[in-house]
Length: 482
Image (cartoon, rainbow, N blue to C red; front, side, top):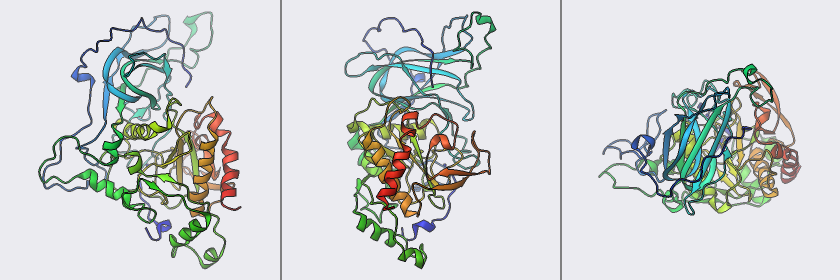
C-alpha cells in the first residue's frame, strides 16, 4: 500500500400517522409461505473454468452465501375512503426467519411521501411487537453520473429497521399529502395524497450465522473445479489493509501516538514534502478497528474491484436510523444485515458507509478498500468524493448517542483525517456533485467533521447526534495534539 495517499481516482459510489392495530394475534401455526412471496439470494455455483473475478460493473457471484433476503411485493389494503391517501402493505403472516427489514421501490429518484409502519413476531416467544415506524428517507446514495448510481440496479428505499430474530410480519404503507396531518373541519378540502412509488416490496433480511460468514464458509456442494469467487474477493478486501494487519486479521490493533506517527511517515514515502516530513504530524493514535472479516462480511455479495477518490478532506457523520434495540454483541449481525440490504435490496456495489460505530464505541470497517485509504463510498449524495462516511448504529433524533460512540467518532477522525493532514476543527471546500441542498458544481464550505444534513437536506444524523459534533471536533483535535 506504499504511497496510498497518491492513489488514483476510481469512479463509482419520518413522522407517521397513528394507524389502528389489527385484531388479536393469529393462530400460532405458521402457514406455508407461497413461492411468489419469497426470494433467496443464493445462486448456483459458477461453471468450472470461469474466472474468479468479474468484469467491471458486475457483482461477484454469491454461490455459498450465508444469510438470505425475502422480497415480498406489497398488496393494496382496504382503506378509509374519507382519508385522502393510498395504502399498501401485507396482512399479518408467517415468514422465514429474518432480523432486519426495509421497503424498496423501482425508481431510485422517487420519494415515498407518507408513513411506513410495521409489526413483527419474535421467533423465540411468538409475541407480536407493537407498531414501529420505518424512516422513509432516500438520502444516502452514490453520486449522480457515477457507474454505481447509473448501474440500472439501484432502487429507492427506506432506512432499514433492526427487529431481531423474527418469523412473522405485518406492514402498512400509507401515502400522505403535506396537509393530511393537519386538523381541518372539512376533509373534502384536503388535497389528494400523492401516489405511492411503483414496485413497492418488503425486504426481510437474515444476516446468517457469525461463524459461517466470518470464515467464508460454504453452503451446499461446490461444483468440481469451480473457483471460489468469495475467497478471491475476501483476499482482495484483506490485502487492502496489508500494511496495517495480517491478511486473516479480524481486527486492526490500536497504536500509541508515537507508533502512529512512525506509521504515518512509513505510509507516505514520497507523499510528503521535506517540510511536511520535518514538521510535527498532527495525527491521532490509530484506534482499534474491526475488519470486514471480523464482522463476517460475505465478500461474494459485493461487486469485485475497489474504488478510490483522491484524498479525505472531510468526514460526514450519519446515523443508520435502524433503531436502538440492539445489543452490542449483535452488531456483527446488524452490520451484515445492512450490508446485504444496501447491496441486494438497494442495488449498491457495497455497503455505503466507510466506517460504522456501535453504541459501545467499537469501530468497524465499512466499504472494502482499506481503512487508511480514500475509499469512495455512497453515504452523502453529492459529496462522496474526497470524503468519508461514518455511521453510528441506531436512531438519534430523540435519543442521545452514548459517550462511547462520540469518543469513537473523535478517535477515528483524529487518526484518519490526520493521515490526510486535515484539522478536525477546521473548514474545507468540497465540490458538490448535485444534491437537494447544493447545486452541481458548487464549491461548498463545510466543517471538516460535518453532519449528513450539512450536505443534503435530511434529518440525518438525528438532532441529538448532530448536537454532539462540536464535542467530537474538539476531542479529535486534542487527540491530534493541536
